[in-house]
Length: 222
Image (tube, rainbow, N blue to C red; front, top):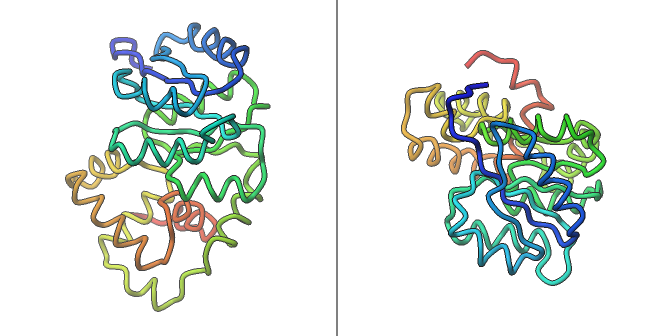
């Protein structure tokens, strides 16, 4: 951990004050993480986020008023460059699928040990895809339900560069990290990812990453 780097800022969105308080206390113990702000509803989050300078949003799924998925979609619609990780009690395949399609950068369960949660949040701020280990089977089910497996023809349609980027997606890397590793601009990576999603008939980079891991593409050399 680079002690000279500025702490990553986490914005908390949950309609349970006690849960938010506990998360605040947990993050206060970490020198490289800090609370950027908090909101008790999706509506409140959308009001406060633009001025919060947050690196990561930790978002509850089931909230009164504007739900987690709707809040996530609204955040994405604003164009804010912030990573969003769902933190919820739900391990239902439909909820996982909905969050992935809305553009979640991770899906964590509230019954995680505090130390593991902090570790996953730290990974998320570094650009990694984070998913609770207990959700492996549920995620596989969600991806299978969300789309048919890509055909050999679809896979053959990927260019050499797209296959290279697919490998990095399987590692859970963000566009920024992929761009750095492949000496490309983030804009170029974004165009390639969009093309991969279209060719493989998938809705989000998370679905692509999960499918790719299932098929061992994360083990292939870039």
